[in-house]
Length: 272
View (cartoon, helix red, strand yellow):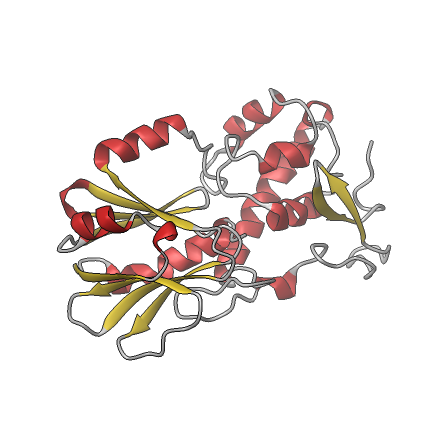
């Protein structure tokens, strides 16, 4: 599932090309991905005035108070194509943009993703009923410390909770905990302040590096041009079972934490 760096990369790659453009047509091949009738009636003729991220959600803001919330789930892709490009298999929705030369296409092999069209009032109501935690890139350390100290359970489970922080997923939690030297099953309440400070610092540095390298393409993720990310080449533990730890040489192990496959170095990330 695309996480914060992948979603942010898609938004940054789309923004210069689609903002200020109007939708003059929509082709829907799989109606379950989007509310077909409402989509065509509400978005055709509207101008894209903003694109931003809420956690792992891509938000398209249109003129006259319309929004489209896009969640890519496991295999969704949001691609910018030229008119005339061959339509790839598993392309389910095409937005035709004014000028006629560009198309915004939604592709999804496993069809778990979706596009939800909403009015401004509906979007506000959705935000209120589905609270997403602070952005990991923006949260200052004092607030991070305060929020973490109030949590029970295992540190990995807390970091994966989208109400605690919006946008983190399995890849970047594992990579962050490794760099901070924290076992994924550690209790937040028992972590020294300096460990939490390191966790906060490593979390933000990992996310910024991943965005710089256009995300991690470990399965189906590509950015808007169809290019794969490169940060998977810099992973130190995620997906590295049986390889040597870059710091100490111990074999990387895979365990399960709250049902999630979790990678760690048992020497560098001792459970205390």
